[in-house]
Length: 199
Image (cartoon, rainbow, N blue to C red; front, side, top):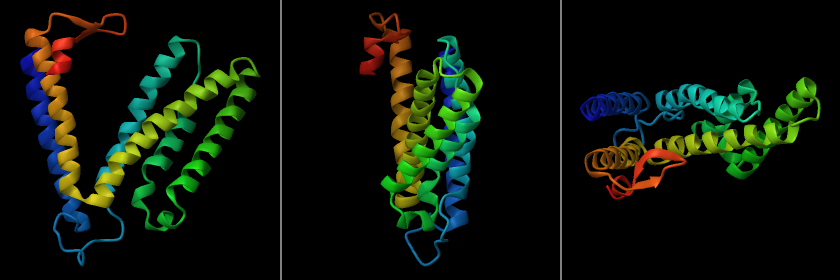
């Protein structure tokens, strides 16, 4: 299990690095020269983040469904994609992150409330709307952070950002699997150990 996970992690990292380098080559941002940069930065990486929003929202919707809450994934995916791709569009930069985020979140909130009231009435509408909005904020803003690192700082800082996160994940898993004995939070995640956290 550990060997397969380490091999898969290395292959996945290599594919990701190749994709980001091709993305930087396409938009001209993998060099220090600013004169060859295209106005739309990071199109492949932004598309990858948008594609990854779909399974992430489906997983969150399944977790909410287990607790009796319903999330309309079409609305939450649309809201997350609108939030996470904002740094790619030069025209949106004049609007400002705060105003754009408020506009997207209020539009998503209205869509979620309307969906819940029309399908279920008022019963549970606030709880289901709240978990849907949380999904948009959690996935959309965190995805937007990664896209902003790529657009504002370039290819190499993005690779360093992802490398640090992936190395910490692999290190925690490897150390926890090899020497982990003391459970961190057995009710929440039974496989996590204090030794893995330190690793």
